[in-house]
Length: 375
Image (cartoon, rainbow, N blue to C red; front, top):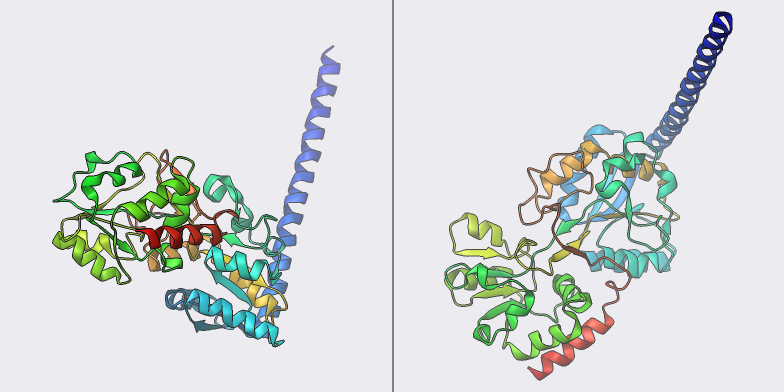
């Protein structure tokens, strides 16, 4: 009996040793695979010598951090607004010119124009670095793609976008439990907002109202046609009017766009309704934090290196430090620099507006135009 036990114990020990060795070998092989891939790509990227992006001004500042880390890869940034950038990319491609390597920008333009034009290569197979591939480091334990196929447009930002502000001397926040309270006749003629026909600046708020199951087209139609709204296309003017008490409520544009948080910090009597205030919640948007690899890119290896770096912990910390109104989808980084209004909070209601349905603006714009004419 004792002999058999000794034999069995020895067999278990031997099996454990073999399995451990196999496990270490497999782990080493996996490490070797990604490291080899990375090293080969980096050498090729240095030979290419550059990577080209069409971006907004703040991204130009952000990618200086990449330049410091990879000085042999020159980052060429062409500065422009989102719609202008998209139009330029498509015009160049129609002319047979393939200049930028990477798209970084808004969900609507990236999806409705570039994705539908089949201008992207899959981004998923190019993710190499273990800390990037490890989805446990990302919000809700997964990478978030905004295309149905889940491999072309990767979101690295998801920010809360409260868009109803108020003068704290004229409005008591306890009066509001729902967006329906904005339709109270007492607020008629006392609301100012961005022009709802303006386009991208108001799209998120309009989609939120239009698609929300507790609000919907009927709510949006009443808001636009019944409440005698005053509109402006100047964010500073809206904030000035709100702070001076000329209007009690502002809407259709985010806290960050009209710098309502700065005004509050300066002592003006302004505030806003966040996700804890109104039961229907607030929109959650990827904003300009979406990345895709353009196909037929002239510098594919440099693009691969940049995209992997972009999604690292180091880069996403730098991203939040520069873009104070953005909240990275990486959850293993500090959030102290994210504006209080923009930061995601666990346990509250958010509505994702970056969906295929939400990106179809035609029915929303048609309703807005019809209701606006009837006001």
